[in-house]
Length: 141
Image (cartoon, rainbow, N blue to C red; front, side):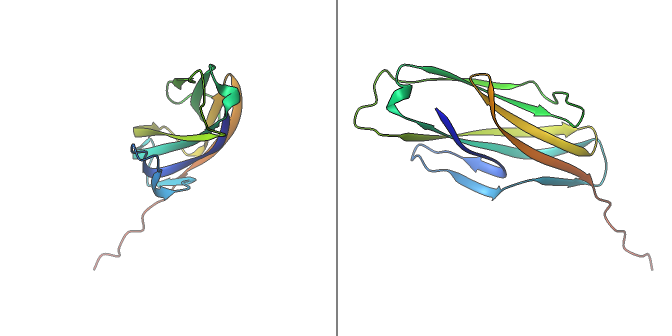
């Protein structure tokens, strides 16, 4: 099993048609006028590639959100991906998985990252920068 790609988006979905639908893909920075801040929705999108060599195996995926001090911000997201015993007439298959994270709380500005591990080996880290951005006030008349 190979991690083909992973990214952050404002919203994403994987309906039964096998397609991947993204809105606002490629999120790297979140601006907030104050901290701690809550972010309404952030979608973690991952696409995995399977080949017949994966038949009968079981893969464990784990996602950790880590802050600049190396601490986990939320409990890890874990999933088990069992493979069928055979892959008839398939050379490779892609599967997209979306984790919709709602109401994430960020205590302070700084650099965060999502570490994606497959079978206990980190395959990708996605940076996420939280910046304080004061909203300019309109001059009072």
